[in-house]
Length: 470
Image (cartoon, rainbow, N blue to C red):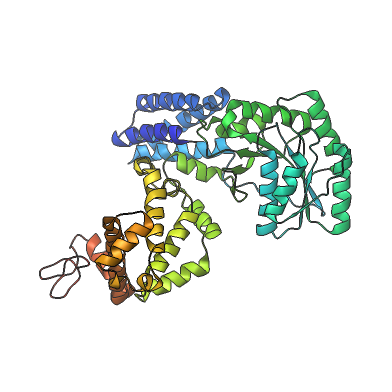
């Protein structure tokens, strides 16, 4: 979503870094580029003006123009201004500080992803916060809307309010709160009806529901793909019913990113959560400093660590690590490792979270890396017998032909996989033999420019040393 903006910002800051000493004219020219980049990204004009003025004012000070690396100083100022524009450092959590059951009111236009987001928040609260959650659909306008929420509740393994035909949204809301009090629920998520556009009937209905439930949170769900329309929608909802936070959906789309940058400044409501994808676990807290870091190519290591913690099986990872270090890693373990990587999402998505990898991400052939190679390797290994997976050394010519035919690949593909696996196994044995101290010594020698320690029987490097992994 922020790719275009990221490319432009990286270009501008990269040019400033090359110039050494900066003049006021250099800063003014760079700010013109930044202004154009933000307008192209569909950022609201008042936000662009405020951002550019703020950066220009701080960048022409003596501390920047006279600093040793003015390009880096400007990059820091741009980063800080981006964080401010996005709402300030740190995620704004959902407000659950109220006597249970805590009502969360979901509002927004039809098609913004409100019902799916209700299911996502229910899953998040139930699994991460250990809350007992009740989902209630107040949407009597859209056919099967109540049934859709009921199905989402089943998938999220939370309760949903039983459907009673003929009730008004206000009556359903009242029944939901009564049921939650009686049955000891911690949180009630009230999914209201949407319209194709904002009208007084919609606002009246939301106001009435708000007045009978007194929600701790009124979350507006907006579609990031609608650009500045999402900001306008948020502004109108905020003025009419009061919005405590925004959830932006379809953040993985190819919208220009201006809505996210404009939301806080125009509406005053913080972006609390973002959705990307239809899966129920595809919901994340919105961290302005992390988004700013990714826009400027600084990566998002904290986000990557969180993603790994959420998606990877820790016990499985530890089991694989022990086997690798003991040199007992087999092809079954290799397939398990592929499964762990695939849980993390796309390779280009992971690269985008690493500092300085923005350009490399563009060079990655997503289909080739994420789908073809991994799936081909899984198919080849699935065509092997149990004994072959445990002891790949027994796989000779006739077995290779059988495996290739069974997996729809070629003997060359089987050879490539076995070669890669053999290299990996050899490396693991070498790492295990050297131990941590040995590895640190070798890394230190390499960084000091002296090459790898060699000598007779040594690691790859000096005279008489063995070739790498040979």
